[in-house]
Image 1 (spheres, rainbow, N blue to C red):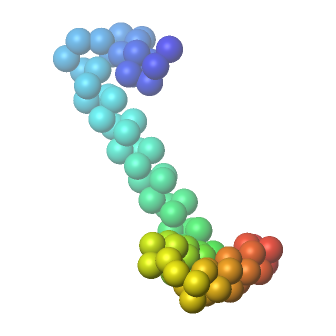
Image 2: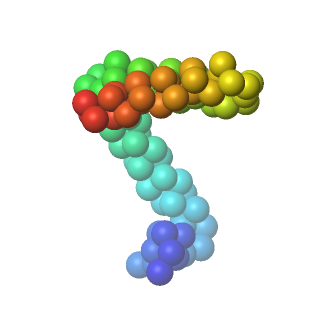
Length: 86
């Protein structure tokens, strides 16, 4: 049963169903934001480092060339070290 069907069951069909479904979605969105805040507080600095390295890796791959290949290998090694810490 899909979430929409579940929200529409138990006498919630008709004109009230969409409102109840909206309330469930808002509750889940709020919970998702709370979890994101907790992750940011606990892991934010580490995740910032991972994100910075991923951006640098993508940029190095796009620019290509021998010099960039060496740089890419160095960035991938840094990412390996950072991920092993997490």
